[in-house]
Every structure is written in structure tokens, then in C-alpha cells.
Image (cartoon, rainbow over all chains, first blue to last red; front, side, top):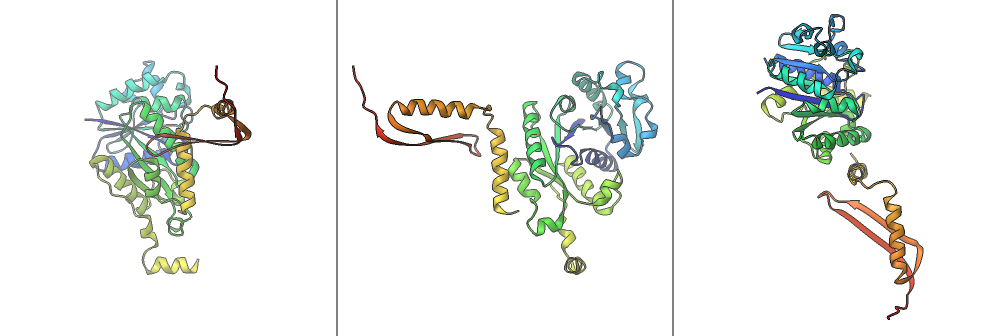
Length: 253
Length: 76
């Protein structure tokens, strides 16, 4: 049975779109037919992160008005991965009920429907969440992000979404080691949410959309595996501090 | 993370859950003063009202105040 998963956070700038794109690709690489829906209709960036912004011809709003079919609108990103774009022009058209209809239609064609939610808990959040069966909540190890994420999780609970997995992004191993940052396990326990993934802080994530760095691909692959198979394999950020080479690097810095 | 930071995180998350409307604490405090002042010679400024929520979701409300004497009760 197809699964519609909303990727949300409450707070902006924590990596929702990056997680949506990379987990989507990792699911596709596992052989799962996956579609990504742009839920941040007014401030869409999923097309840019995926590197397909020049290929957007139609958008979800034009499917609703009958100017294009879903098949014409979907943009193939790679094998088994597509994007349903939504641009600023369609803000008025794409209501929450329309989003539910689109999600349900895509669930018939794909195994995974990932919805990239906008920040905040206003109309755009509601639109993205309403059609979802479950959620991935992204936060960083900062108090403000955790607080907003917790509020978003509680709102989702009131929409009937009980299955919420936590992804802690931008975890710096040296900060975890010296105790200046919350550990992902501490965040998971405080938020009462199961930890589904940990992503290390890396400058390359900010430079490129789809992460090509080995450790990032590995970390996203673990999340996709956890989503797909219900496992709990978590990337060990402290592995970066282990070994003689890394210890020497820390002593010299 | 240091213990005090963890305690702060948990306190922030719990406080957000309380769903107590703005100003409710002031209203409750004023009511408490009115009630207790009927029984005691109350130092009204000393009244402290603390509302917390436990992990289980239960609210804990504590009221602390000082009084110099018990008022005389009048019976009919």
C-alpha cells in the first residue's frame, strides 16, 4: 500500500527540502517508485534542490484547472523518482482539499509520496499535512528548532497523524563530544518521538541540493531504509571523531 | 548536553503544552487573594502562584501566601 509522508519541522531553515529530496532519491535507489510533492507553494525550492528548475513546464495548479494532466506535469528526476512542482502562480488554487485529491491520485501510481511542507503551522502546513498518512519531523539540535518541532508534532497529532519519526539534522560531532550540543537521543526523548535519522553537519549540504558526499548519502540511505523497512539504524556522528587520524586532527585544531 | 540545558529544554516543551491563556494566571491569583483574604489577615503581595505540568500531563498548581492572623469568623 502506498504511503504519503509529509516532511515538516515547524521552524524554517532546518533542512526539510534537503531531507525530502535526498530521502526521496534514497528510496528510489532502493527501487521504490517515489514522487515528491512541492508543498511550499509560495516559496518553492524543491525543483532547485533537485536541479530540475529549468524543466518545469506545468505545475500542480494547472492539473487542477485542467490545463495539464498529472503525467504531463510530473518531472522525472532519476529512475523511479519524480517531482510534482507547485509554483507561486497556484497559491490560490491549491487548497488543502485539492492537495488531498492530488495525493490520493499519486498514491495509485507510486509507492511513496513525499510532501515537502513549508515552515510554520499556518495554511501551508495544514495543506501539506492534511493528505499525509505519517510524518518525518526535521529539527536541528537547537532549542528553538526543537520547541517549534514539538509544537508542529502536537498539531499533527490533532490532524490524526500519529506515526511521526524524528530526523535530527546538522549534528556536529565535536559539539556532541564536548557536551555543548544536545545529543539526538536527548532530543528524541524530550520530544517523545522515535529517532529515525541523524544527519551530520556538512558545508556541502548548503552548497548543493542532492548530497553527493559519501557520508551524507550513507546517512540518507539509512533513513530511507528505516522508513521503508521499519528499522532503526542511526548514523553515528561520533564515528567522525574516532580513529588516530581524527584524534590527531582534533589535537592540532 | 549539560544537565541544566536539558532541564531548560524539558521545561520549555512542557510550558508550551500547558495551554493556559494569557492573563489566566493573574485572574487566578486575584481570585486566590480574594478567597484567602476572607479567612486570614493576608499579606496580599506575598501570594505566589505556580503552575506546572508533569510528564504525565497532570497540572500541578501550588499557592503560597503569608498571613499575620486568622480573621474572626462571624456566625448568624
